[in-house]
Amino acid sequence: MKIRRFVIKCVNEEACYELLNKITEEVSVRWLKGEVEGNKLIIEALGFPYELKSLRYEIEELKREIESAAMPYTKVSIEELPKLAKVTVPVDALVEALRLLGYSARLEDNTLISDAPFSEVVEVMKKMREAMEDEVVRFRLPHSAKKAVAVLSAAYSLPPGAVVEAMEREGFIEPGDFKYEVREEWRRIIKRLSETLREAEGTW
Image (cartoon, rainbow, N blue to C red; front, side, top):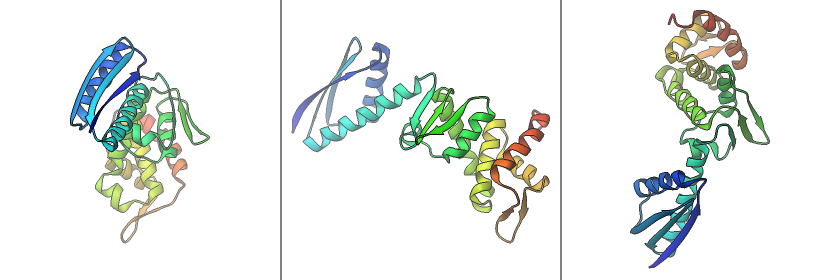
């Protein structure tokens, strides 16, 4: 075993302290000492070479997470997005949800670009995932319909069940033997139901 010294540059002193707190709370290590000097975080850690290599990777991941959360906008690759947000949703559906919430959002070269703060993107993703985990949504809806429910539920703060009922009432889905059958493309469902939900918003 050996002691290794890491010097990490942060955007400011506050970010260094936040990173140090996250490291001490979330990283498992044999022994670690950290101190902040201006916009630099100095870490000393004890471990075997493979442990120290893993520690460096974990520190870099936590640093990216903190810096992304502080961004007043979002520009992140679709590969990094679930790692930073710690939740996974269909990215094309996420774009639609952000647009319904009034943000600009697009996919460009496998990168999500939006004027929504990253913290807001994460909250939307969490709401979408929660909707997709609803029992009816998860087991009885085809994938395309799941995306429509997740988007509308997150954008209008509606229970997933209420969205499913509205989709069925409007004839976008029909009950089958085991699953609902979809009668419309999912983006068209979102567009057409949004008009109805905007009118009825606050009455659910």
